[in-house]
Image (cartoon, rainbow, N blue to C red):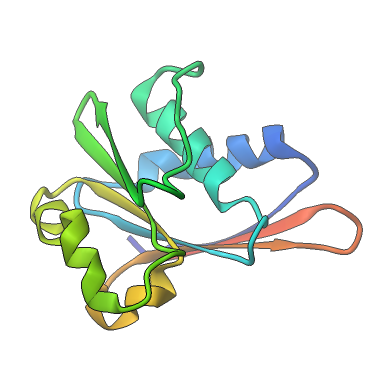
Amino acid sequence: MAFNKVFHVKNEAELAKVAADIAPCLARGTVLVLEGDLGAGKTAFARALIRHISGDTEREVPSPTFTLVQTYDIPDGEIWHFDLYRLKHPEEVYELGWEDALASGTILMIEWAERISPLLPRFCVRVVIKPEADGTRTITVKA
């Protein structure tokens, strides 16, 4: 997938629409890297994407900040959602089922992926969320 698009959003509802817009482009086996500072909206984006792909807009999607990884059943398999903020060393990701996640051939979403950058697959879809001074966010999607 060759994709490079920039979105400007004013609120979480528009952020969710961006997630819904890119969802059809995410094939099984996609590794989606969510980049942005603390509080940028990475988890909100992941939550909206999981809800859209699962077809359940009310689905409970807790942040994996403390569990470090959550899995969600979807019609075509599952989604693995990693939050690696608390990792100290890249190798710690193996304790979270990293190899199983990669081998599953399903969608992986990773917040704070820079913590394991040497272990990331060569091809990833990158979603960069940047808060702007006026309260909006710029979302850049690159594949």
